Image 1 (spheres, rainbow, N blue to C red):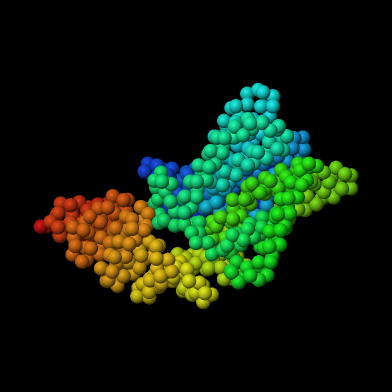
Image 2: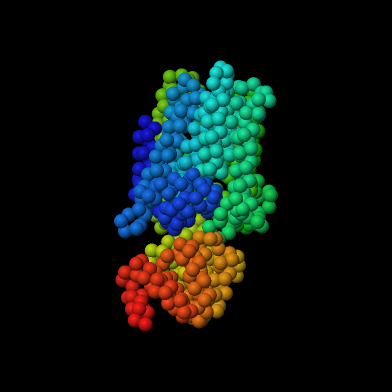
Length: 605
């Protein structure tokens, strides 16, 4: 039943496409995923992606990429989404088993909790979005680790063969952390399991969890450093430009952060029962909003959060359920309640993936208790449960369609938040990459009219004008982008390219120099190739050869690089090297008449 329900709810996702929201960085423009080599395989284990360190997640994407490649070289999203759905189905089955272990002998509780988890529309983001592979994968290991720990406690109670189960739980916990850092939430849940199972307190309860605590601290520190754009003291390799997901200068005060936590805590519970306003991007409110009605709503939600937590502790003497269910929810959602500013959104549907297990268990037990009060209530609970699950399935199928492609995804965000700058930027970039340049310009200009001053808006305009051949205006837009964010290497790279197109070679070289300083190693070969071309045109042939050498050694095996290095080599007197380069250019691109003609001229000498 769980498998059928899950696939019935999520099957429409299988014809969805990649979206302009992390998917390029994770898959469609990630050479480490698309070009499988020994070097790339090694890099995957030490390379953060999109300010996250999750090598097992990236390895799983490589596995899908091998199956998703088409004869024309393109990559289809379907195999990635299918794997996400398989993992989500397995997770739902694990929830079924885990619930049965925590509430033994009660099939309704286990089945209802698993079905709610399986078909809830708030989980669409974790399943239908290729880049959220980390959610479904880390949950798989997390749930198995929790199950192994429950088995350990049972075996320990009998004093029979219990240590292998604790070791297995720890190994699975490490795998979860290597899939997503949020897996550290398992540690407080282990203590909650002890509480639920009425394990008597003794020093051994803490000692047995010390390895989990130590690993959680390690992965927590690593995640914080990576989120700030770091390489964790040189242990990791940065292949892209340094960025920062944790705001260095927080525009909000500590009180605002507390109310943001109250807002998320309360809204996730409300949307568990009544899923509304689902979308991928919930932006922060403006300062004006916080000083008006929105601020009062957030305050009320914060009071609700405090009351819920205090109520759970107050009720613990009479009923452990409230503290266990709400504690499970809080332990797994706390790190994403924006007490520490991470990312661009105040809320995200994907943040509920594990937390809703706690709420599902709580609701299932409450409904079971209600049903046991009489036959009429049993029928009412049964009918209500079925209707609730059918509602969730219908909403999930509808929400899956908003992930059909970038236009549907960001169009939905703009329906709810018409002035969301990031939505405009991503939609504009989608239009640009699909050749709809005029629509892209309209999209970016609308963001500017709405008051946006983000560098990404002007970068998008610069790319659009550059595509139309208006390089002078493109240069102006990239300059405005740099005025907003002066440490973004991509802005220097793009402005350098626009200057190169205008034959401003010295100015272009200055921009490429700055881009090389700011960008990660993955983009440096391409930057060196462009700088090498400028140097060639300026007559600085030896420097041009050096740049093309590094570009080619870095994996930028474009036939043009060999063609232009051949010219630079010939002009430095290296005729043999020039011939070798031209031959290589022709091997890479047989229909390269300029290379063929030049090679014949060199051979004729």
